Image (cartoon, rainbow, N blue to C red):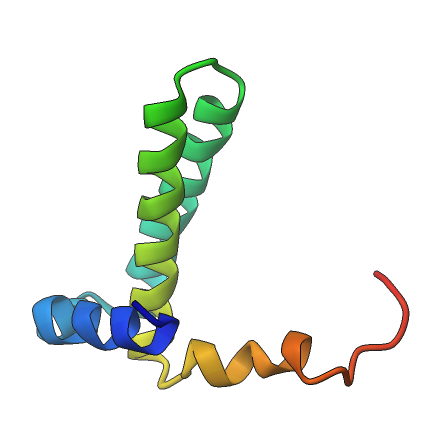
Length: 87
């Protein structure tokens, strides 16, 4: 599945509820999931790490959807050879 397809799937399944929740509350959910990922990364449970990576990505897609950002297009920043140097 392509990134855009997943983002569209998330939007179709959860979009109305996500927009009602709004950006601020959705961002808080994302941050909570990032915290859970941090905890998982400190452990040895590979399945838990995988689950938390998926949760972070799904919430990132949700946040992008409610802010009208196409992540696949945004990621062209990294895939178009326009980046110079490192951060």
